[in-house]
Image (cartoon, rainbow, N blue to C red; front, top):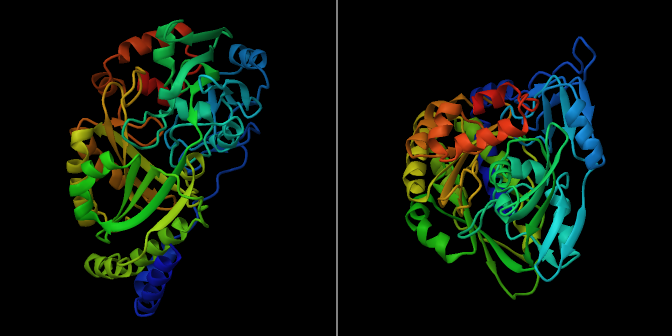
Amino acid sequence: MTSRRKVLLGGVGVLALGAGGLAGRRIWLDREPAALPATDAKGHVVWQNWSGLEHSYPARRAAPASEAELAEVLRTGPVPIRPVGAGHSFTALVPTDGTLLSLDAMTGLVSHDAASLSATVRCGTRLSALGPALAAIGQEMPNLPDINKQTLGGAMATATHGTGKGFTALHGQVTAMKLVTPSGEVVECSRDTRPEVFHAARVGLGAFGVLSEVTLTNQPLTRVRKEVRLVDTEALLKDWPALAERHRNAEFLVLPFTGKSALITHDVTDEPVRPRGADQDADTLMSLKTLRDVFEFAPGIRKRLASAALADIPPEIAVDEGWKLLSNERPVRFKEMEYHLPIAEQVGALTEIIARIERDATDVFFPIEARIIAPDDAWLSPFFERESGSIAVHAYYKEAHDWMARLVEPVLREAGGRPHWGKLHSLGAKELAALYPHFAEANAVRRSVDPQGRMMNPFLRKIFG
């Protein structure tokens, strides 16, 4: 929204001239994190995730180009063996001083069936590449996450999801898959063949081995109308259940200290194509940061200025095939905590979180994201047998995020939330076993396919006990 950005920057820029002390403080704080050593004492090259929170110095890096090569790496590589996709997980799922394993050489479509609208895909395929590949055969995934840079395997391992009534996370579209275990065995599984592996490893955190291929049930190419509107947060929270029912896909981003939220909807349409324009979200986000920088210690003024600047801005509308509109560019790095709550708890928990942030965390400027996900039957899915409302909070990658654990996580846990596997949380095996009815069974399957714990780094040992 270019006009929104101009209003924000124009008003804040003038006022910043008279607030040099506060702005100067923020300029001093707004420094790049210290760079990590490129290599360790053994000459191993550093790996770091997208947010910069996690890193390691793996002894070996492997990029097998076939299932046979993948099986050999899993069988013989230095442990722990950790698969890596795009590095978009914020938790310590990937770090290893053993083998870092990428599927970047195992990508693309394997086969497809036009009659059943299904496609078998190699798990190293990036979601951004999968969209056009499926479109070329007249198919598209029914739903996509906010960011499409992840690999298919990494997205499944962490239960990555989009939003919308009746739409499952990505793993809910899977009907069959191949798992290469740490012993090098290739296990083909589905609901009818090796169902215990299918249910346990479909959302597997990279702890059961490595998925090499999955078969997805897709839909025909569908044109949708995407609309982004700025609305009053208080009214939105009251209307949210009805809005979620009314639109095919609906989500919203609460803009803290503004009284406003960005409501994003997608609906099937036969309107002519209106391609999306240049993405302005990053510019708007950094404008909100400027507003924060100047008025961090005057949240009342900050809120009044932002509310006025964001009033009466026309909606953004785009019309195109769904796979082109459901995901977004997110060039500004951040750190994230996300939990998935019973749907009836979402609005109440979100209301409390907004109040806590605006009272006790005045440095926050990133939006708070709310989405809806349908239930599924994967044993380690955060959406197992319940419709869920997700709540995600974010911090700029250069800034502290301790407020998430202090202010936000207690609310999410009290509401019965299950954490996103790829995002920040403090839970271990005891707490997780209480949240997942089949946690013990999934863990038993994990031990059966990896009895030596070849896939287990310290973070996974905490998760699985």
